[in-house]
Every structure is written in C-alpha cells, then in structure tokens.
Length: 262
Image (cartoon, rainbow, N blue to C red; front, side):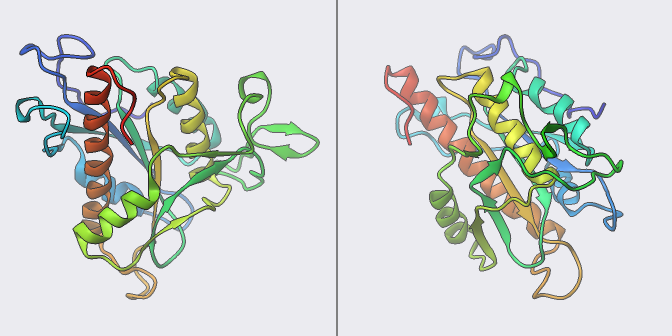
C-alpha cells in the first residue's frame, strides 16, 4: 500500500501543544505510471509539494496569531479501480483528519482543468491491470448497492470552482486554465466520485472539500503542453493554498458559533 508522507505529531486532532488550532492538513494525490505514461505528470507535479508547509493569510474572522499553516501530505495512487476503492475511503476517517483532499490526474492536451463533478456510472474502460470497474447491473459499471443508493448520478464538489479559477488566473497570470464538467469516466472520475462520497459519508453535515485537477500531458509543444512540471506544481500549490485558506475562514466561522463561510 502506498505510504502517506510522514505527519507531524499533534497533541490531538484539533489543537497543537500551544493551544492554537492545528495546521490545516491537505491530502494531495497523484497517479502512478500507466499505459504510455512511463512517468505520470500528475505525480511528477504533486511530488514536488511533498512535505511542504504553506503560510495561509490570516483569516478575517480570526486574529493573526491564529493564522494556520497549511501542511501538504501526498499519496501516489495506482491506476486501478480496486486500489482507489480500498485506499481512498479510509483517508476520510484519518486521525488526525484531513481538512481537504485535492486529487490530480493527467488529462487531455492543452489546459489545466478544475473539475466540477464526478459520475456514478459509465466506467467501461480497462484499468492499468486490465480490470473493469464493478458491475452495478446489466453491464452498467460504477458505484452501486446500498452504500451508494443515496448518492446522485453526478456528485458535485463543494469547492467554489469559479472563485478558485478567478483567484488562480489573477494570482498566477496563467492563460491555459479552465473548468470542466467531464472528468472522463476513467480513474480520474472514479477517484473523484469515491472521494466526494467518502467525504459525505464520513461527515454528512460538514463534509470536507474535495477537488480534482486535470493536468495536460508533457511534451508535444506549447499548444498541447503549455506548462512544465515546476509550473504545474506551482498551479497545484496555488489551488491548495486557496482551498486551505477557505478552510481557515470556515473553521473560524464555526469557532465563533456561525455556519461555514463560503
């Protein structure tokens, strides 16, 4: 089983030894090599952020002394349905918990894409071990049974994709970046649906935010691959920082007796 990068010891899952809120913990995943990808661009970019701690801007709802750093934990995931199904759900019940999960996978040439949603059915492509997704009924493959009967055919991320997109374009001054509503009904889509539903099962009232980012393949010229690995890592880091800051604001709102802050 792939190992998550070492975690810093915490007194408990909410506060550190100084009595302040613990760091925001974000899990960032990429995929192993498969098919033509001898090195998977998703993991190449994600691995650049392994063990990194980001500084979150102070929350407007909390004093600067309570500004929480953002710890990035990374995980490389095999490109198989069974690996995703066994690895991802337990991570949403980890202790200390993760505050958000950001998945990264390789997509089509061109832009980096922020995915809005994931699909429940339609997984008819063989994975890296030449296996298909579980059959739900009569040749339909995906997610079924009692564990998923309360979930929709399309599960949407709670992340403000439009807000994130605007932030990233302004912060990074990048052009080849857009949103998408078609993660592809392969392992990227499969891990996204698995993670979204696992988050909602783990905490129905306040599920943690889950995001999926598609990065383009490397090589093939600027039109197909406008970014190299360090640039992709910088783009992913900006997304993590934005999601982490939103978590700081949300937690501050709960601490003050309010609801989550959008």
